[in-house]
Length: 498
Ligand SMILES: Cc1cc2nc3c(=O)[nH]c(=O)nc-3n(C[C@H](O)[C@H](O)[C@H](O)COP(=O)(O)OP(=O)(O)OC[C@H]3O[C@@H](n4cnc5c(N)ncnc54)[C@H](O)[C@@H]3O)c2cc1C
Image (tube, rainbow, N blue to C red; front, side):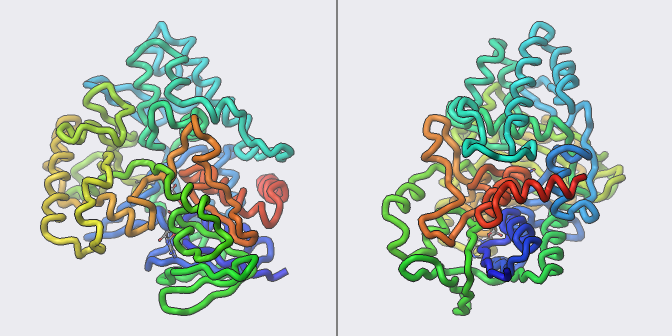
């Protein structure tokens, strides 16, 4: 066959498409603007300690579970070492001084929360039934043959997660608890669809793991496999234009001036960035306008903590803390009370570590807070920007200290990132964490198709299907399915797992 597919961006979506297509006889070239491959799978090392930037924990990784099946197909299992989070408390939701544990498995989840909410046991059972049902009914999550264009029940798409939770229980505190890990999808009240909440929660409820040694191992493994199959993956190869003739795309131009031609093109970058690369009548003005008007999920401010050696026992749970019972606050936070919430987690450097070397402390931050440095580049933003970051980090560490007393004295040093960091490292619009915000009241308008008006230009990544490790891998199956047939890929995955 030997048709040439050029992929713009080496995020998880680009690498997964590259793997699937190379495995099926396509010649693959992946072009990445950064020195490090992997997009949000990038890690960085400072003073000998490694930090994750955008993939902290994964789910459904026990044999027979969905992500494990995809990892088998992608030949990731030999390279990726994982460590289970506490099965009785993988996520701990802390609201206004009280803590609630999410336990793995539907029954354990219900039993754990029913201890605190004994009258809500039936409601919790119904809640978990729906969570499971959404995932079970999705053919792509259950790896069933797809005979119908509609991949999900419309009710899961048109109903909001917040309305679903409210319909489950009238207990206002329990409503907050059930939505407590919503930073995982940067949920917005009345907008984020039920299916996103359900798929994310089902994914982690099945089983929950950290990747030992950092999530860059996933990118490295995929890159190695793609190269072994004859594909090329090139860092420092920024695409600055996609050239088209009268009917199709013909080549991409790199910043260096080099042109790379191909038979098919896949863009793994944010749709707004893709549209900017296209100077052709094949893309209509109305499409450009629609993409430009899409709202994105909020960005974040992160403190990367390096602990003094052997001072901090490894914490096997993720802590989602809220000062007040307003978990849906998101990007609408009150600047005077910032940070009203945070996510705190230790990083896993090995499968048997006793002490943590590093942790992540993260909260929401809107791009407007850093807009004054918009025109600056990495490492050259000026002293006032550095002072801004220190001031914000200190406020966050003060809040952490209230919840985890004694942590501050264990800190050797710390680093920070802002919405500008994410914008510049991944090219995501305004540093948005998870790309385009899905809105259940405008489902068709807020979903970006893997197809474009240009027949041989496809899109992949977190803006297609959904974000996160499973959402992006499934999105890559959908995109690659345009060339190979989606059922053919599903069959290969099922066969590889037999
Ligand atoms: C803070 C944070 C925490 C997260 N935590 C988790 C988690 O715990 N678990 C989980 O499952 N998911 C998590 N996610 C989500 C997950 O990391 C992402 O959904 C996923 O990795 C996105 O993959 P992608 O394929 O869309 O590409 P991206 O990672 O966005 O990569 C796009 C790539 O394209 C490159 N690029 C951009 N423009 C160009 C150009 N012009 N030319 C060439 N290359 C270009 C970029 O440099 C980048 O490498 C998190 C995300 C964030 C931001």
